[in-house]
Length: 337
Image 1 (tube, rainbow, N blue to C red):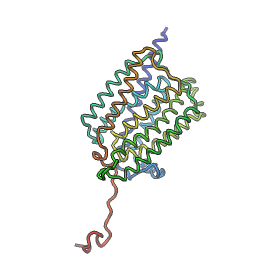
Image 2 (cartoon, rainbow, N blue to C red; image 1 turned 45 degrees about the vertical axis):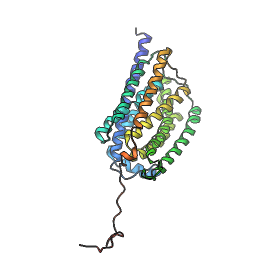
Image 3 (cartoon, rainbow, N blue to C red; image 1 turned 135 degrees about the vertical axis):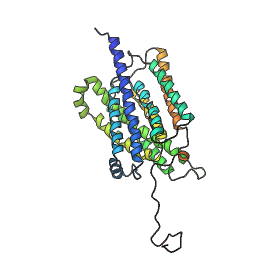
Image 4 (spheres, one colour; image 1 turned 180 degrees about the vertical axis):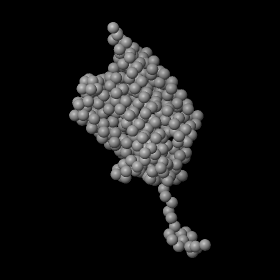
């Protein structure tokens, strides 16, 4: 007969494996979307119809979107198996894969500080793996729609204010004295990360229903609950903000900031809202905290390793103004040879 300890350990390992797979799909999707956006006209979250039509016209973007949806689905399954304090650090560490792909596929240069950040993340993940405890690392199921709304509504309002602030900075070139245009990418990432954090709380609520009722019998409950629709709304809102940011700024800066903020938010709020517990052994708790802090520190190093506006132009280009027939207003010479 299989012992309960063996079952719990297998449960934890399966959850970790699914989380790794979800991170791979999610970050490959980021790179594909970024590549697809490079061939599109300027998009913006304010012009919803135009944005949807533009991205839907890019097969590469659609493949990336499908890949990200697959990653989100696996993340929901992982959240039904292990706590957010385990899932989120592993998931957000998929940024290491994104950095490598950004370097190879997007031509975004990785300097010494970026590789140092990658090293910090790797060490933090090792500490996190040592903190795993099959006895205490069980997914919580106590979340309520009231708690999620009370936490998520003000968070989304703050995120929208930050997004508008970042948008305005785009009209102030870094060459202008006292300009803060170099802050635009981190602010964009902060805005999208907060909204995605609220979406992750909804995903955790969906996973809780699957955990308590089972995947087969839980699906009807998920379809009739408000959590799934809240997940759809917040994910769509995050997508609009993120695509605007991703087209204007390098993926290797926007994505780390977004992932760090989303992960920190959902671990802090989700652990409390869903009644999850840290490991019982003190040394495991210390490793869990240090590992999570290390992931956040590594992401912060990656996000701040460069000045965005000085290093990367936006991936779209404004069309050059064509001189009127008969000559340019700046060139009074007559048209013709």
